[in-house]
Image 1 (cartoon, rainbow, N blue to C red):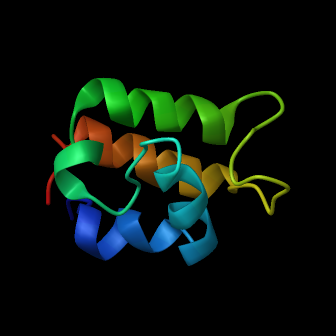
Image 2 (cartoon, rainbow, N blue to C red):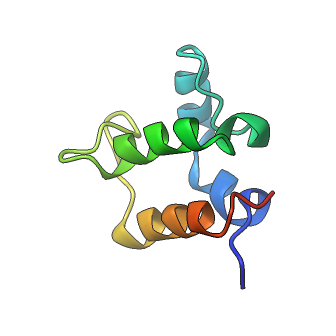
Image 3 (cartoon, one colour):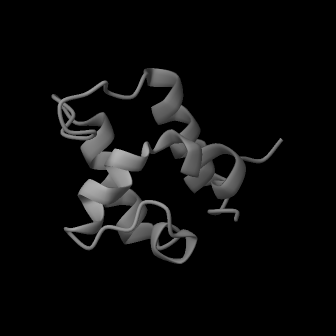
Length: 79
């Protein structure tokens, strides 16, 4: 089953994450923004970095959550 933004990816972001990143013009809850490969890659780098820098102060994403995000990208950024 293909991964979708609305069903699988958007719920990964907490309301506090969305508000915090909006100030930096990173629209985590906006499909049009997140479906651009450069934007998705930037977010991916922050959640899987060593150490991760998002969400600020944790809890950080699990390996399964990172894999789901990567699968969404691989599947073609489905809405």
